[in-house]
Image 1 (cartoon, helix red, strand yellow):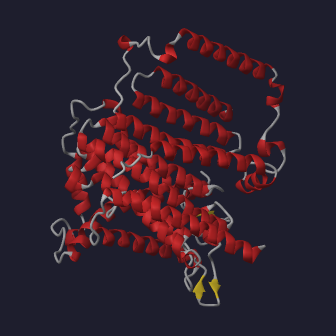
Image 2 (tube, rainbow over the protein chains, first blue to last red):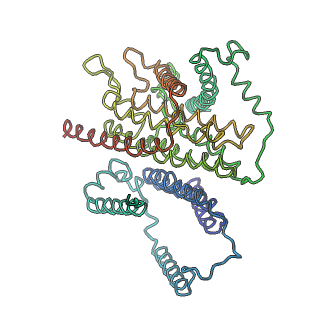
Image 3 (cartoon, each protein chain N blue to C red):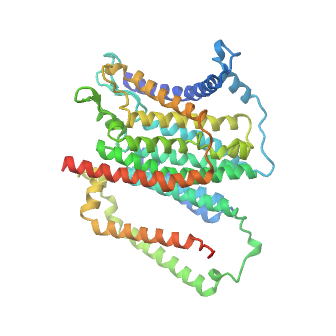
Length: 178
Length: 341
């Protein structure tokens, strides 16, 4: 079945690319592989009848945010990470921190396994295949967002605004009193 | 084979062929127009009036030696031009260039002129053009040269900044047409107001059109915003270290991007294939004429205006163009609500 084949192609690509993002020593390659991973996930969204979500992912993450990442990596001209200069004194490599990180990873794995176990609902058709109105149509999405989920939408907007103002304040250079 | 499928494939192949030709024709047009603007003839030796000059250019570039700097990143250096030109071609996929046609009764059901018609077509164009910046940025970084790096840095900052005003001006168009499908937006512009004004969106969105045109020039890295390859400062910017076919792909991508930008402008603001008094089956010619006029404007501007300064570009984009497009969007929404609610 071609659809299943495409699904495995995209999900395989997404997993391999994401794994390679962590495995790379060159930050430039990491950024590019992350873009590839986003593209594969966008393909999966397309298969789920969610073209708007797929394109929003491509425009916002792959098209804008990752370019900024690339910009920063280029600007800092970050050197290749070298295994020989393993910095033990780095605060993130403190034993307590690493153990906490491991705990989080275990919790995440258990959660994922639990979600997969009760995956009986996954056999149900989604989107337009379920027979209902195509929920992912932009018109419907906008209507739902500005009526049912108005509060969440506005709260998110304010959160982003706060982050933006914070970034501007942090980046602003105080002028010397003349 | 199914006749319908065959014709659809032919339309797709024709679009691809026209895009390749567009880049060749634009090289010639650019040099000819520049020549006439500077009171000389431009290329004149190859073919009648130099008409075959692009062919000669391409042949020359094909037989040049391919060089790669020693410190360059092997993979990304090769990938960058491919990425650039692929994104440029792919962006045209959802740009329609003509009305529906049955090819004079050859088919029972009409097919649509254009590669694909999807209901979020405008977003597809937007997503793919925003991928185009990777080619330039990677070319700049992987060359391992100061000039290239500066070109790439400028390109990334410039394209991110102008994408915002570009998208905001398009949002106003989407609001008025009530659709994200480019074909539906074009068809919403058919007919006349008061019997003599064509219902083109440029008359409703003059400010939006201006913002789109300016941001479009910055997005395609054309003069007066051609900072990524500013010759006087950066030798050739991001493509300094490139030669042969790899080099040829960058200008090709740039010219195809110009063609896409002009085609989208004609579709969204200038009524696409609609023109008062022209029959529908000649729509593609009207469309071609509009795109041609827009492209001529591009070239005209390049040889008329001097380049800005980089900080002027950034200041203009963030402090003037973006607020202007946001005000335009809010005003459009207000007027739309007043008349429709």
